[in-house]
Image (tube, rainbow over all chains, first blue to last red):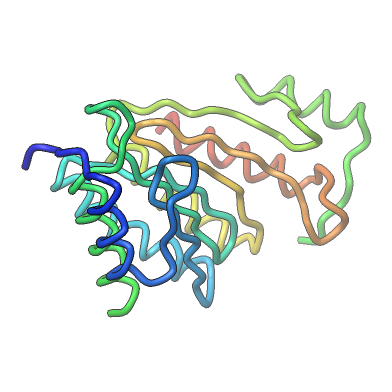
Length: 97
Length: 97
């Protein structure tokens, strides 16, 4: 799927469906908390497989049971695109499963 | 294994055996480069299993095929310990395998 920059209104609309996500420094941002390091790492692996399939990858920082995620689309100028929203939704889906 | 703070001399000695590692903001630091995102993620999983077994975990940031690692030991005051050196060596071992 080709990446398309979202308008500000589209980003706001997307955030309404993404609990705990904000826009931070022009990127979609969320801090995920897990019960353990293996739980955090397992989530990263499952999300990572989806990211690779999408050809669209996160920036993420992990320490112990916390993962901080930043999503933006480098290919079209480091803006928030439909692919970032799609990846965020996948992260939520895996997180709540 | 209990964590023991390393002296400055011990840290310098350890760095001599850890190619590409530096001390950055009081932590052992290295940026690892991989051929692909799956290669980076696979390395993180293997290292992560060792980290969990050690009961000693990294701080790490991943974007695409790059992983930036910071190692310090929170339990004894966010200093560099023998466990950080051990984990760094394990990271090298997995990286070169």
